[in-house]
Length: 77
Image 1 (cartoon, rainbow, N blue to C red):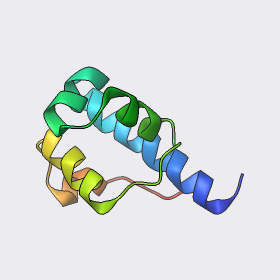
Image 2: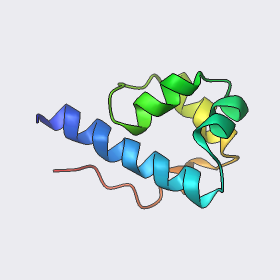
Image 3: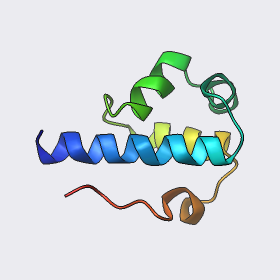
């Protein structure tokens, strides 16, 4: 697994943790963020290289500040 794949997988795990801490299902987050269910699912699995606008949509869906959204996120080495 290369560095990019590790980074995406690590972020996906972080997003899934944030979603669960918010008490949301993938369906709820996809609705709240305006993203497709399959897109959120693929992000959480580390299969998608995100666009900036997608990050913003996820933050809005989680009603999260950038500080909270990225707090605790450690890119995999």
